[in-house]
Length: 193
Image 1 (cartoon, rainbow, N blue to C red):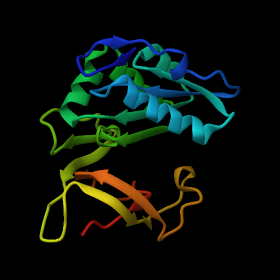
Image 2 (image 1 turned 180 degrees about the vertical axis):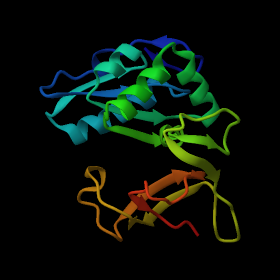
Image 3 (image 1 turned 45 degrees about the vertical axis):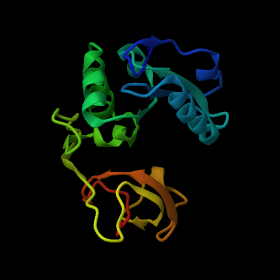
Image 4 (image 1 turned 30 degrees about the vertical axis):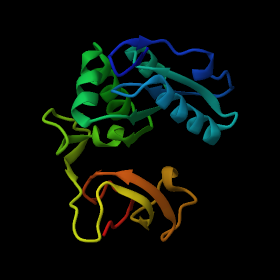
């Protein structure tokens, strides 16, 4: 099921699955996003996978347990997403086991990335604690708008398969109001302001 705004179950239909050969890529649909928002992320994942895998949209622990790769797009607020994730029995434990104990590749997008940390300034509930630290709110100042929306330059911090083909000085588009600290786990960073 995909958990929607009213926390109703919306089952993935034919548009949310693609029968391809190869690895099973799991898109965790947890939080406050609706089915359309998740379809946009599924489409993006498919564009990058080509014929490399099978995309499953689910918030079921048994699907996470079988996934070769896990993507957690967060749509909404940190506290709501963390609460929704924990409301599914066994989901948090399965996610932590797959990522930490078994080494499954994991990509958190937006609030999904924030959930990796111990906490966030956006909510009073704990994150997953897979990475140390607290996600902070960006500070507005004269000439510096929050949310940060627009293109910005990336600084490569270290290598990794996620950043293959991205050079120091390349640009990325940002839409966010919160940021994690730059530390040894950071692949790329960007300066806002």
